Amino acid sequence: MRSNFLKHSLAGLILSTALCGTAWAEDVFLMDGVTPSSKDTTLVPAGTFKKDGPWVIGMSHFGVNANTWTVQVAHETEAAAAKDDRIEKLIILDAGFDQAKQVADIEDLIAQGVDAIIVQPVTSTSANASIEKAVAAGIPVVLHTGRIESDAFTTEIQGGAEHFGKVMGDWLVGQVGNEGKIWVLRGLAGHPEDTNRYAGLMQSLEGTNIQIVAEQNGDWQYDTGKKVCETLYLADPNVDGIWSSGADMTRACVDVFKAFGAPIPPITGEGNNGFFGQWITEGYPSVSSEYSPSQGAAGVRAAVALLEGKELYKHYDYNPAGWDVEKAKQFYRADLSANVWWPSELPEEKLIELYGN
Image 1 (cartoon, rainbow, N blue to C red):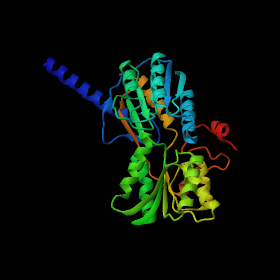
Image 2 (tube, rainbow, N blue to C red; image 1 turned 30 degrees about the vertical axis):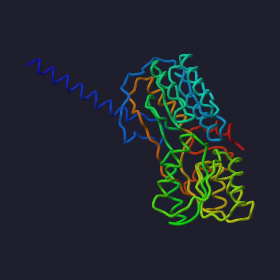
Image 3 (cartoon, one colour; image 1 turned 90 degrees about the horizontal axis):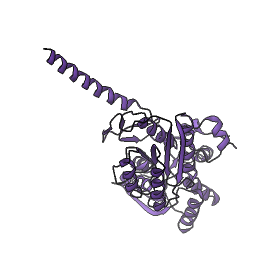
Image 4 (cartoon, helix red, strand yellow; image 1 turned 180 degrees about the vertical axis):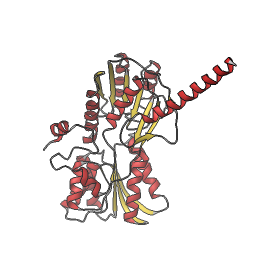
């Protein structure tokens, strides 16, 4: 009898622990709008990477100075790390879009013996072998801002991608109708985020007769985007809508149409203060996909949770709905520069310091 009692008690304890563990993973806050993936509910078991602090966290950034969004990701990462006294040091290494540099950076972080590594991949394959080496060395790897062709990472937070592209694509189809001619302004060639956003657009265009009459990479930058749009406009200004993969390119293209005194066609945007101000002032038809730079902060929180020994899901999604101009008005701030992105977790004093006019 006693043996049966112990068996039942042990079974109950195991079941209770399992149930509590699942709830625990679900209760870990990473960022507003981030949820466990419904397609893959694989768990990282509690205690796998548990380690007493203080901690040193490393980050391999694909390109800090690529555009204003990538700069803010670094700021959001630093701000989140500064809030946690257990993080002794944050090391951010900039790959500058160089695949070999990213490999070397991750190898460097492993050699320095950091406690966790956050990776924003340059391409879908550039960091795979180094990530495998880090995890094999007992260092958890948190991945965000781009999927890779490997599951060696510990946990990933993936937003944008096909969902981002489809939110904008669905809206543009609604504006243009079943037929029409559109321009496509893509981001950085070869970056997984660009590839996946474009795939989302293709999903939206399935079953329509909409023609892509021009497709160029604006690198998610204002200056490059402006040159692209000027070239396209001078070649043929007749376009029914524009799918733009990033707000800096959207602002640039709108400025081109304004410079030529032409009406602004429906054009997609993103959660950028400069774009919001332009959209609100000019009143042109648009939609804003959300892609918060606070993913940098989410990466820090995921790394901390792993080092605390908490159970996490391996895959997290960040798929918010698109914003209309009324929601943009709630976030837009005339006292801040065009370079700040929304939503942001930066404290007010840091927003003023970095982006105040």
